[in-house]
Length: 458
Ligand SMILES: [Zn+2]
Image 1 (cartoon, rainbow, N blue to C red):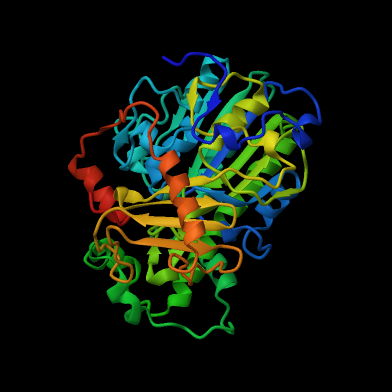
Image 2 (cartoon, rainbow, N blue to C red; image 1 turned 180 degrees about the horizontal axis):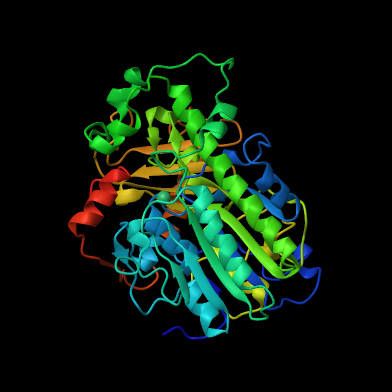
């Protein structure tokens, strides 16, 4: 049971300014806003910032806040969504697998909002997000479960149908929508793929055959993966399919915002758009997978639009998914759980000073800290899943993200001062809050096949 006490921003408390100020202080008092949370599976941060790829998200950002340095806390779907919905790091909630079930005593955002009178709904598009496997939708009144993998247009249609059902209703609602189109196999209508892969493009095609040996064995040997790429030998075509999938999600967001406005709901809606993690499209020899803790995979798009503003603000300080729960509850004027890891972003707006961000890798293979302009990665195991990027226990990596955004120059030898500081940050955050309390749902044959169809080994 969660005690309704003032929350502590655990771990980083000393680094956080004490008083709320800046843009957070402006505008009207918080109210019982509707809340829409959109999570796009595996959508990279750089899907935003390009009007050609995601014009509707650009328009949404113009009405709210665009975060240029938002990070996931883990690169696996269910654990990452658990962090978004609980405000806890994976080492706090204990979920590390897609089939994880949170301890029933941990409260999630839908449960909290439900207890305060919100109608709660969710549209999920992963078989393991259904309630017989995952309890992330616990507290959800209307669940659109995953019966088959839906394309963005179908997912959007369900969202629009739900919004229509709220016409004339005064009760605030929470709607969580999870899109899957940017997860392998990338899904997009041909018209969008053509837009991103014109016949006369600048770049020369790279050979998929040449990079095939760099795919993990469980992809190379997977008939679903083979079928997806059958007949394709152009890396740029696959990349174009990815950006087209991002555009398909963008179109969906545009329709949802337009419908909210048409229904007169927009002025009372808090809208959050993010991704559970990014995707590597060849960076660091990691192909079409959310592996590694480099920026392509660890950094995510984040747009928040609040009815009380501010509008059109670009925020460059590092923020993390664990901050979202506190930030949403803060905008609604609701109390926070007693034990939550992240902190409300609003009091820090206007300050250049961000808090360090903590990242974990799927399978507890690696962990990382981002502080200011630097990123420190530590390898915890020795394992080669991606042949182009073996994980080597004891290896450390240090990058200056400002001077070297491609993370190509490891500074562990040349900057011992920064290395020592980053190690200290790591030590500070490593201790979990409480015990790891997740369990693993049973995996039947159908679920196992569903996992394989999306490239997982379980
Ligand atoms: Zn995911």
